[in-house]
Image (cartoon, rainbow, N blue to C red; front, side, top):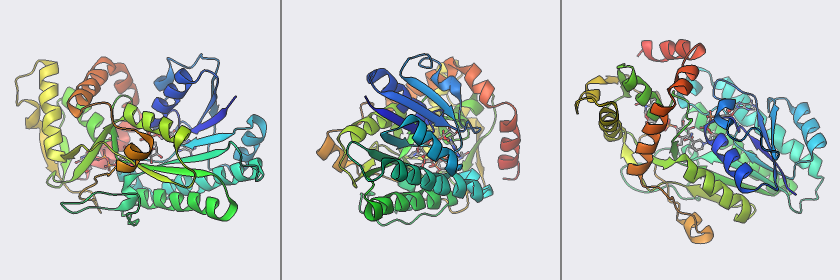
Length: 350
Ligand code: NAD
Ligand code: DAU
């Protein structure tokens, strides 16, 4: 019987990974460890919280002693590490939070795993979930591969790059069995509405301006979150130790074009005249250090482990819009309180 520690399981991607593992592997014990920051929400897991193989631990990965104790108590045999501060704009206003959670928190988990597994690494795995942002920014052509040199530009991506290096160093120095995956932009249900797609869906709903950074010419490669969770499942079970796997959607969109698609689908769903939501588009000051283009070559994952995305973007974006419109209480709850303060600070100055 496996005992898997999944960190950050109350967040956007983590909740989809926890759900997949709890439902698909009833014989595994899944321990979801989460601090429940503004981004963590146990409502994301309502449908599985009573399953006998699901366990929740409220804890902060920055507390190294606590991580050691939890390994001792629960005897985890593997880790899927997703807990992180994940929003680039917040990393620009408060880099230290990112250093603490993304770097120190990761080292605490590596130390706890190393110490508890005591060099008996058979059947053990530390799987670190990372981002394509560590590779920096592309020009008009080319794709990130697993051998692209790291070149992070934001405190967020620099903290993730640092954590990736530390994870590899624990393999090379101590023999810890590790795997890393680097994924492109995710979208789908349960994403906190500070990120582009849910933020714009929510703003259109309330007839609020859609703040497009710069000229809207930056390009992102979008992947439906359930496809990312499925890739993590495949890599966790079949990936090779010390390997890196890039995960992406082969689905590049210029921000402004993507925003127009969201506007169109929202007009349709809300029964508004076509073109109405586009009138909300407002060009605002660009993000500092804004990477121009991300695009992933996920050929290795396809060739070696047979993973490909299951969903076309046209389907994915409609499913996503439907989810947010059908879960307006979820949206209203996460956008009350502190969120409003964040939103004012972030956007009023632009
Ligand atoms: P998220 O912000 O939605 O969720 C992060 C979760 O981590 C939250 O539940 C939060 O409560 C928890 N957390 C934060 N600090 C913690 C701490 N100190 N101790 C314990 N728990 C803590 O993030 P997400 O978008 O789901 O991203 C998950 C992971 O995937 C991150 O590591 C991120 O870098 C990576 N990633 C995200 C994307 C994306 O598009 N969102 C793409 C590639 C990789
Ligand atoms: O590439 C993977 C990364 O994708 C993850 O590692 C990060 O955790 C995740 O947040 C995401 O980072 P981005 O910065 O690409 O995502 P975000 O949704 O913040 O922005 C997407 C694009 O939209 C980016 O070019 C900035 C732009 N944008 C964003 C916001 C919030 C706007 O134009 N206006 C906005 O209000």
